[in-house]
Amino acid sequence: MEIRCTPVSQCLDKKLLVFGFEVPDLLAIFFCLACLNFIIRAPHLKLPLVWLPCLILAGILRLGKQGKPDNYLLHLVQFHFRPKYLSAFEDPSILTPPPRRS
Image 1 (cartoon, rainbow, N blue to C red):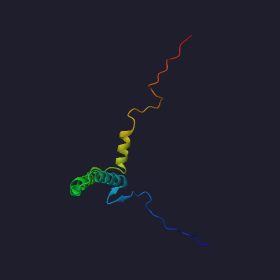
Image 2: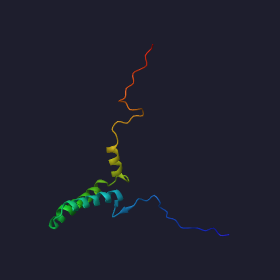
Image 3: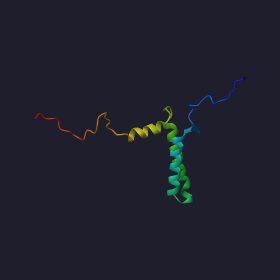
Image 4: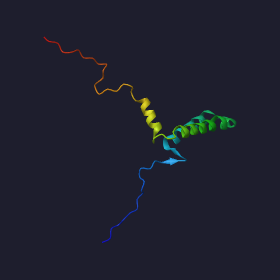
């Protein structure tokens, strides 16, 4: 009896890159492009006021994330939205008086 073999990908943990950008970076660039395109309606102003800021944002993302770990922007945003005070105990604002001897 012969063993059936199926070829599989050898790099299952490889991150998805499109033109060298990660998916969250592309979402940020396209969100900027969509918002500016929605706000600025004049066709003669599209190039300087819609496309140039998005290209500048793409350049900043490319240069700013150089040498940083994967999903750096997501982790940075999560860090800034996390509460500044972390405690293993219950809410410190609720004070209970200590027990008294009768």
